Image (cartoon, rainbow, N blue to C red; front, side):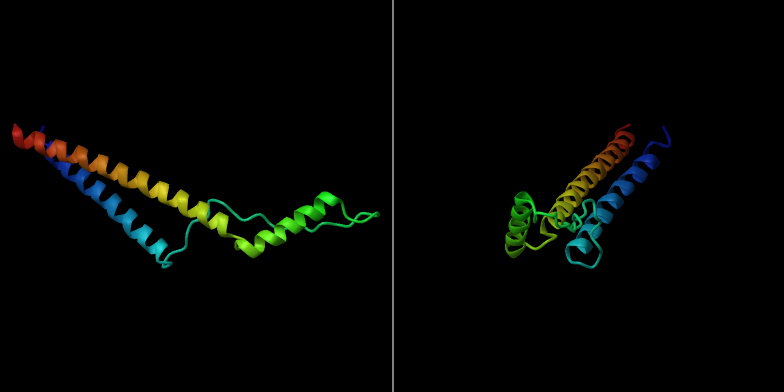
Length: 115
């Protein structure tokens, strides 16, 4: 059990390092100093070819709705929002994991001190 406090300190520092790296990386992303990783991509616009009798009514309705939505929301708003949500969830998981690793390290250090 001589190695228990050494492993405990390593785990404590590793957990704190994971938490610190996650917080710094998240801060840089939210202040636009780093690029947000893209988990979702905006769909590419498709070119609709005209049929002999004119365009299909459904295609015309889709185009009209698409044009109206472009006026309300920017084109890539939804994908950026989804990317931020996924990044925030991943940051939460990393911070939670780092705290669990640090907690194990603290338990190993306390276990050696109490003996």
